Image 1: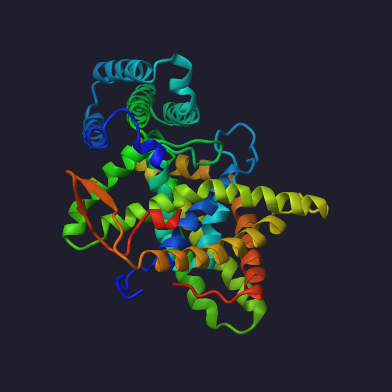
Image 2: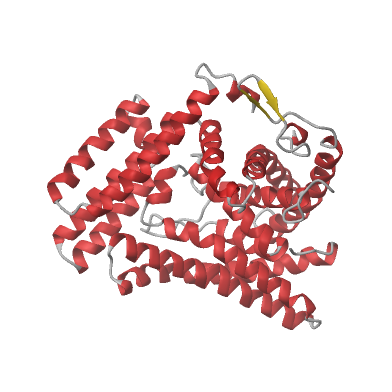
Amino acid sequence: MSATRGQSRGRSAGRSGAVAGLCVLAGLGTVLTQIDRIEFLAMAAVAVPAGLVVASGSFRTSFRDIRTTLLIVAITALLDAVTGGGLSGLRLFLRFSALVCAAQIVTTLWSWAELGDAVVVLLRPFERIGLLDAERCAFTLMLAIRFVPVMSEEIAEIREAQALRGRNRSVLALAVPLALRILLRAEEIAEAVDLRAGRSVRTHHRDGRTSIINPSLSSRAAS
Amino acid sequence: MNSVAPSLGFRDMTLAALGAGMVVALGATPPIPLGILPVPITLQTFGVMLAGLVLGPRRAVTAMLVFVALVALGLPVLAGGRGGLGVLVGPSAGYLYGWIPAAFVVGGLARRFERIGNPLVRGASDVAACLLGGVIIVHACGVVWLSLVTGLGWWTALSGTLLFAPGDIVKAILAAVVCRRIETFITLDRR
C-alpha cells in the first residue's frame, strides 16, 4: 500500500482527478443513453476507443481487459438485431462499446489507490446523512485488497495438500478447508486490529496536519 | 470494541473483507468454458452462496459491496481476470449487481433456518435458500438489467440466461453441502 502512495503524481491531485473522471463518466453514461441519433452514437463509438488507445499508450493493451465485455456487447446487439430491427441493434452496439471504452479510460488513467480515495470522497455525502462511515468502508476495501494474495496462497496450499492425497479434482476438498481457514483468520485479524488500534493512530495526512478521524481505525493495524 | 459503533464491528468488517477475498480467489481458479457463450461457468457465484450461508445477511452484503467496489476500482477480480468500470456498465453487469441482494437473501434465510433440528430438512432448506437467492435473484437482476439497459425483449433475455441454470443448481447444492461440513467443525454466528 505504501508503494502506491509514493507515486510521482501527488496523491491528492490523483484523487481529485479520479473524482472528476468518475463524474465525467457518469455524465457521459447519462448522455449516451439519451441520444438516439445514429450519427452521434457512431462518432462517440469512434472517438472514445481512440481516446482509450491514446490513454493507455498501446493498441494491444488497451482492449485486452475489455475484450470479453465487448464480445458480450456484440452478442447482445446481434440478438437485438435479429429479434428487433437491425438499426436498434447497431445503436445498442455503438452506445455500449463507447460506454465500456470510456469506463476503461478511467480505469487506465488512475490507479486503484487513487480510485479508492475518490470513492471515499464520493461517499462523504452519505456519511453526512448518517448512512455509512466512509473511513470504515475504505478500511474494509483495503483489507480485502490486502488479502487477495493471501487467499490465493491458501488456495494453492490446500490444493497441494489435497493433490498429495489424490483429491485434487474435488470442489468440496477445496471449499471446506478454505472457508474454515478464512473464518479462523478473520478472528485473528479482528483481534489484532482491536489490540493495536487501542491507542490513537494516524489514518491520513491532510494539509500537513494530522487528523485523527477514528482512533480505533487504522489500515496499518491490519498489515 | 467500545469505540466501534455496534452497527458493524471489526470482526464483521474483517469477515466481510475476507468473504470478498474468497470470492476473488474462487474466481482465480480455472473457469469451465460453456460452448460458444463468452460467460463461462465459474465458482464465483458459488462463492456468493457460500458467503451468504456462512457469514449471514449483513456481513455477506458488505462482502459483496466490497467485491463490486473492487471491480469498480479496476482490479482483475472477476473470473478470467476481468475487472474495471467497463464491466459495471456492460450488458451483463446486472448479474454482478444481483450478487448483493442474493447474498442478503441467502444469508437471511440461512439464519432463519438455523433453528431446524432435522439435518436432512436443514440441508434441503439451505439448498432452497441458495436456489432462491443465488440463482433466481441473480438471474432476475441480470435479465432485468439486460432488458432495461439494452432494450432487448424480455423473453430473449430470459432464454439466454436459462443456459446457466443447470450449473447454478449444482453450485447451490454444493454450497449447502460445504456449509453443513463447516458446521460440523465450528459453530457459525450469522449476522
